[in-house]
Every structure is written in C-alpha cells, then in structure tokens.
Length: 492
Ligand code: NAD
Ligand code: 6OD
Image (cartoon, helix red, strand yellow):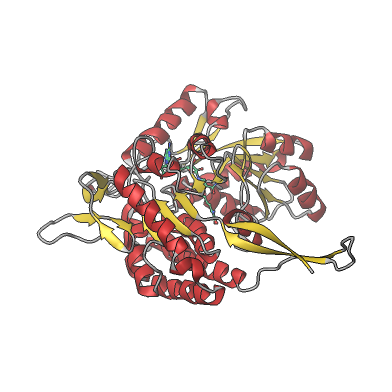
C-alpha cells in the first residue's frame, strides 16, 4: 500500500509473492465520512491474478508445504504479534475505509483480526486423528489411520462490512491448515488487507503463501480468481446472489465452496424477558456498524403485552444514539460504507413508506456538521405496521433499520421467524429456560442466541441455514473445508 513519492494520494497496491505490486489501472476509494476521494486502488488484471495464483501454487509446493505444524504455528503466533503491534495502523485504515466508530473497531474488528490467527494456531497444534486395526484373510492384518492434508490454493472473497475480521476469519484457518491463499478484499474496503502484507513478511511467511489482489467481481479480479483453474477451493462471504455466482464458477473443475451469505434475521422478544437487556440487545443488533452486519436484526417480533412499551423504549434509545465521525469517542453510529449502499438503503426507506409502514423514528438523512456533509449519513430507523409479505420484510436491507410487529403465541413467533428464505441467526429474549430451548431448536438458523446477540466463541460452528450459507467454519469445523482428509492403509 503506501503513498508513492510525489503523490498526494494513498496508493493501495496488490500483494503478490511477497511484494507490493502496482497495476496499470486504478479505481477511486471515497471516504464514507466526507465523500472525498482518499485513495487510488490498483486493480489487478488477469495476468496479475494469474501471477498471484501461480505464486500460491509455488509456495504450496515449496517451503510452506514442507513446514512442520510446529513451525507454522510459530509463524501464526508472530502474525498475532504483528497485528497487535500495528494496532493503530489497522484501526485507522479500517475506520477510514468503512466509517465505523473507532470504539467499535478497537473492541471488535482489530482484536478479532489477531484472534482469528491465534485460535486456529491453537487448534492445529492438536488435531484428533482416527486409527483402526483391520482383520485380513492372511491373519496379518492392516492398520488404517487418517491424516489431514491442505486442500491447496484457497481463493478468499470478502465483503466490506467487517473487512479485517472476515478476511482473517478465512485466512487464519487456511494458513493454519497449511494452505496458501489468494485474497480478494471488497473493492470498497481494501486497506487492511493490504496492510497484512507487511505483517506476513515480517512474521516470516514465505512469499506466495499470502497474496492480495484488488478489484471488483464480474469482469475483474473476483471473476478472474474464482474461474482460475489453479484455485483448489473457494471461501466466500457476501450477498446470497454473489454466492450463487461463485458456486457456478466453482462448479468448473468441481471445486469445494464455503459460503457465508445474507440474512433477514428475527429478534423474538417474549413478555417475560429482562426488558432493559432486550432493548439494549435489540438496539445493538439493529444499529451496530450502522446495521451493516449480516447477523443484524431487521425483523423484531414482540409479545403483545409489552409491544407498545418496547416500541417506545427502542425509539428513545435509537434517538439517543450519537451519530458522528469515527474518531469521536462518543460516536455510536457512523455513516454507511459507500454512496451506492447509501442510495440502496434510502430506496428501502422510501419503499417502506410506499408499502404502508408507520415510521416510528428516522427514515432519512440526519443533519450533519459542514465538514461531514458529503458523507453517507443515515438515521437509525424503526417501522411498524407492515404486512409480512411486504418487500421490506423479505429482502435484506443491510442498513440501520428494523420493523417491529407483535405476536401472541410461541408457535406464532417461531413461524414468523422462519418465514424467510434466509436462515442466519435469531435472537431470543426470554427468562423461561424451557421456552428458550424449545424456540432455539425450532428456528431454522445457523446460530440462535438466547438473551444475547453476536456473542462469539471461535471454536463453535458458524454458518447459515437455507439461503444464508453452505458449510460451517469455526473450530474443528474449519478443518472440514480447509483440509483434505486422507486415509492411509498399511498391510502388515
Ligand atoms: P457482495 O456479495 O456484493 O460482495 C462480496 C465480495 O464478492 C466482494 O469482494 C465483491 O467484489 C465480490 N464479488 C462480487 N461479484 C463477484 C463475482 N461474480 N465473482 C467473484 N467475486 C465477486 O457483498 P457485500 O455487499 O460486499 O457485503 C454485504 C453482504 O455480505 C450482505 O448480504 C451480508 O449479509 C453478507 N455478509 C454475510 C456474512 C456471513 O457471515 N454470513 C458476513 C458478512 C456479510
Ligand atoms: O464473527 C464471525 O466470525 C463472523 N463470521 C461474523 C459475521 C458477521 C456478518 O456481518
């Protein structure tokens, strides 16, 4: 990355075979906070994507492929140190790219960037294996044991909402399992991926093990990477329709995919809940990261006796949120990530009104100080009154907004939560433990939280049901995707 001498603008380069590499073509990165052009991103062409994949293949067949698990783990631990040492650089870059509050990135995004290497370094130290003794007709027998080999060159395609967190969530296990990677970060948030290049070199990761290429999806680096025959497996986080396109690309050569995709998640608030905790948790789940979290709650269902009180409490909590510049420690909500996404979310705000929603709060763009007026600011927004078949109730908006409706019975709450093509998460708020278990088992999602939201243990399986995902990553489940399980049978 790095500003070229004599250039006022930051230049964000590709990272191929251990070197930062410029491209003939660049595209512009705009600040979500001010709308200003803040960096030029070097768009990898087909030849550069090919060079990155070849570098990854060479590294796989070279020192990285031969390295002991212990040596690999030692390098992964140096990556944890490297990110931690450069904490402020990662923090600044992430907040500049996304507009998210420093307070959020400091407590979530950057620490998780380091933790994603640590947890998988720990995991691969002690991978359980299988061993069988087998009878044979000659009486001498055979033994069978299984080993896990790397799957090969992994293509990693990432979104813009939690850039470093979601990238390292894939790169951590991929490298821990002995693979090499070619990563395409989102075109909207390329900076922290580029910063990782220096961290890799400093930690002693051999050239070619970790490569970053910048660009878009179709007709650009994303497509070049996913269609490249040298890529052995593809892991993706992003929109469901993009995931479907990537799955088609992966079908060429019958390559495995891991897909973490969109959501239209429900919050179920039962009348016996801890009311204040449910309001606080729902507030976070709807508005954290300006609502740009796949696990966020866009559909809130509240048991009728507490409906009016809950709507009033969430409204006043939303209206009390401080919207402002990321560096301001008081800021709870920053802007949306891009002009394009801003236009998309605002079009849903209009659609909600057209579909007959009552706007409880928000619904537009807040008044901001002059210096921030060019940014992609938006109000936290709450609606009531929409029918279940409204588009706003069905489509993922990915902005700071939620609709609140009431329910009367547990069965109805479960049916409402499940009435979606998506199946990522549900947050259940109740003090009744038996009910919590019943409901959690019946919602069709990858993760059901009870009296919590976005509480993560990285050893647990993570992924989506229905159109929210294919496969699970996290803990030992990551081994299923990032390794090829091999049986070795020895006749004695
Ligand atoms: P996106 O699908 O538009 O883009 C994701 C990445 O795919 C980007 O790097 C993009 O350049 C690339 N891409 C786009 N088309 C491609 C193609 N044809 N071939 C190869 N690459 C292509 O998603 P986004 O807008 O960046 O992120 C928001 C979406 O991500 C939301 O739907 C959100 O729910 C989802 N998401 C899901 C999870 C999860 O864990 N399930 C996590 C975060 C975000
Ligand atoms: O925390 C994680 O590991 C994870 N994959 C989070 C996804 C968040 C979606 O925006």
